[in-house]
Image (cartoon, rainbow, N blue to C red; front, top):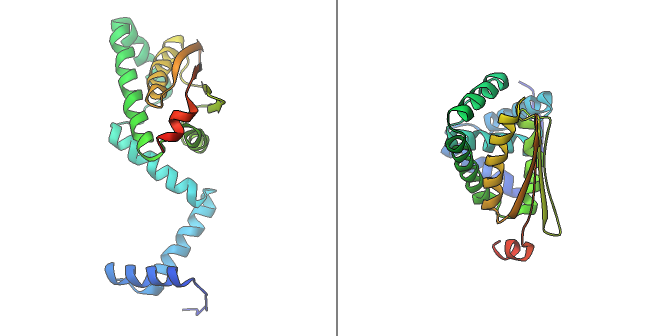
Length: 196
């Protein structure tokens, strides 16, 4: 086994010592595992912060009971549900949007930081564009590639609208077409900042 001298901050050295005792591992094994994880992340192209976001995204998906489903199948299911009961289907997606909004807001209470998080999360969701902007209280949320039909766009818009309402966005207007959803509204930035 090769030997290598490394320098660590006192804080990191203390954490390694503490966790080695808690986990019944050697300091060497913790450092080896950490370096292996670094190279695995590097090979996938993910940064540490992206990996942490991905884990958080997975936790939220689990909390919501989300399951992966092929986009074509979801599109068909949404249209069948809308034909059966449009009002109930949109209500259910709105409820899902509120739940997701509350989950996000529990760790990212500010809409401006949310815009940054959404930019980072966009690489984890199967859409071609996911973007939130807040310029002087004028909010714009765009989702492209959210299904293949007007029906899918309708349910996406319902979910996003209720998600944005959790963040205090008001006067929401929607623009939808096949595979495209754009919602605009206003938020009182001063109220949002005072909640932090």
